[in-house]
Length: 144
Image (cartoon, rainbow, N blue to C red; front, side):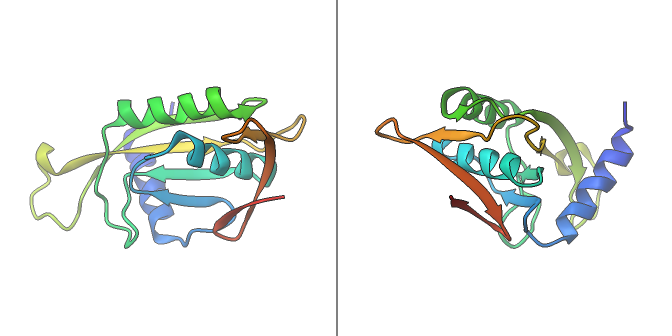
């Protein structure tokens, strides 16, 4: 098991990077259908990480980890065929912009590692039941 300090440093290094093929930042998950496309797109490409609890300007805002975990797992269950192979970890991070490192300044982020599919291509169910395939191209998820 990796140490909490290692995980925190890994996440902080991710935040310094730009979104791209293998990295996506989300403030929170608002749509299971939408996040399922990102999951499938990353899995069908090279895999990668989705970091939840980060604003567009890369501020650490934190999330309710149980709620976000539910949204990710439900999206994978309901929309992805076959399921995406995932590892979901809650990471606690101190917001360094705050002067005192107390528990109130500790934020929870969710780090979702999307594994590259080793088997068949992953499809997402659309509103009318049709299946679509997605790929990650730079910082966008596009249907193929």
